Image: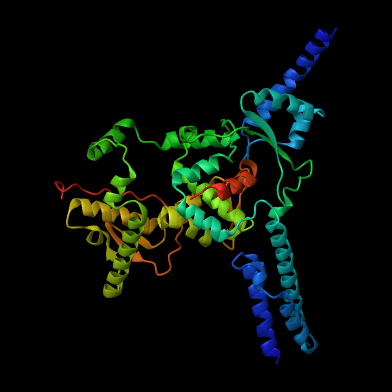
Length: 193
Length: 256
């Protein structure tokens, strides 16, 4: 009897699991992942159970389903205000971390990664916002003035940083989604020179 | 009295705006002193504009108080670190170590790119605009040379296209262009400016000039077959918006 129930549950989820996987992995718009309302509409009301199951499967592949939460504007200490259900977005990210060689293999240059880490750490120390010229100055000391400008443009284009009309840079959506800021700042503080 | 009051209120507003743009620490401004200034001039305001200025200043001051509150909360979290301390660490850590630290806190998104109507349309445009292969091979015959190979930073340093030396040479070239322009009061002919004593120097100068133009330090003007350069006094230091790629082949010494 238990065996039959288990089989039923498996087949019940199989189709929904596929649909949820497609929604989360295949990029359709500007941002990756799927909004909560999309999942509700296409997977069903029990989408959270489906995502739990998907998370278990992905866990074996060192991946996980994450929900984006966004800190309140300018409030780094706010530690992530949970968005309204309709606004929240789910996506799949790496559960563990990459090594230097792996990062190179997926197309990242070591100096670009170093610059990205530096720019993010500096912005966090400034509570998430700083004038672009300040960020570029910090990068220029390490990577040269010309490269600093190019790097800032790359980080803006890829969504790791944002810039407003007044030339103030802030952490972008991708940083908020991908980077464990607490871990980054702790590691920065721990590193001996 | 009224003029002095307006000036002081404008100064308060400007300081508050600078704080909001993160140019200063929120505690740079003594809010009590700001409120005291508003209180001092408030009884003298008569016109609508002056009252609006007063309300605006009060609004800006309240924003600074909010930022001070945020700063205090932020300082009590594990994320807090002095910006100067972080900047010093970034400067002193090796690139490899900095990248490793970042990688330990980075969990990149996983996504699969797929065909959409826009990407198909862009691809079609690409193929439709592409010249036939014979045409492209014809062009390549002129550019046939040594295949690209990898190099390291010491070689790049030697060539002067890496690190601080690169930035210095770039600034030097920009100043040369400015001086020449000030002397001649007309756009400087491209090839005359770029030409060096050796072919290698010419290539190097052309390479630097491409950066000057891309980042708004100079403008490249083309008239018929004549190309000329005009330096910008206030460079944007950002890639020019809406700029186009303009390849300039450099003839080898033989062709000269």
